[in-house]
Length: 453
Image (tube, rainbow, N blue to C red; front, side):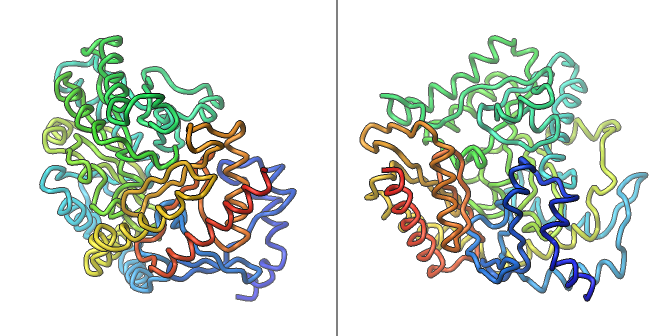
């Protein structure tokens, strides 16, 4: 369109004048200007200057099937022409919403058979938060309102989501966390394990949950929430002893277990859901991101039968205008069809996931690399000042930003969380693209190490 072409010539100035970006200092951002991403295909994106990048972060952990899938565009267009919108209030449904609920639950091993649709992962967090309290009140235990989460966890940026997340810099704005939310330690052995073995450390951290329940009183605790693998906190893969002990405690102490699957869900770990990778079944599980591969915004909460039966026995006074939006639901249905037919979950488990792990392991000989972790296509490279002692840099954020920027300059998009470089590429990434990623990251580490020395 001609108007679009005219706008693109001055888009940076327009963006700076009118657009507030997420998680950004706009004064600093506007000094340098935004990078304008114009198009994408497969695992590659192009900016407005024609430079291409391997998107090793799948947008924001979400573009699981890769960019440019015309099947989704066609399905969405057809649904737009048939029924562009209708709500799920007042005893109505739509074919896409009903079929999507069936499709999602077909991959939960018969354990999570109900879905409540939302517009995002943050909305899904707010939804299960209310569900947990409504559940216990309906069971005659209204005092069970307190929620326990983890330090350095991430559950969205709404008031409830940011409160449940354990990010201090988010809590510093808006008088968070809200009342009734508490945090325990994270299973981050490399940073916090000291002289303990990983399994010893993980057991200690898991048992902080039991101590917190005792402190608050079991009769007051509704739920514990955690990501199977912490995403935004740094792709922190818990040691093997962690999840069995968490599950034991939740069952023994009669509190709901919520697995935040917003990042881990829909194939990223080599299973349909992260909790399946660790062999446990949560009572509820918020989902989003990979549900539609980011093509349209949609999320939801997967609910176990025993929780759903209680919630559904009376009115659940909660919902959104766009819950189960028919066009978004069709995009998600087509996305899940592609994942199934192309066997992308199996590909992550049996092929590209192990290939990425093998490639990352080659970085362990680098002077700046202290550890690598990966499960499926979630990965982290831990940088260290002294890899023998696990000594970390005095300013980890500066180190991560330096390496990330050198990756971007070389055409590779990764994410830095402190002194950890994170990868979460599309599930369709090729072996050759993984090779490029490892080679480019090594070059960025070399350049950063020399610069810091």
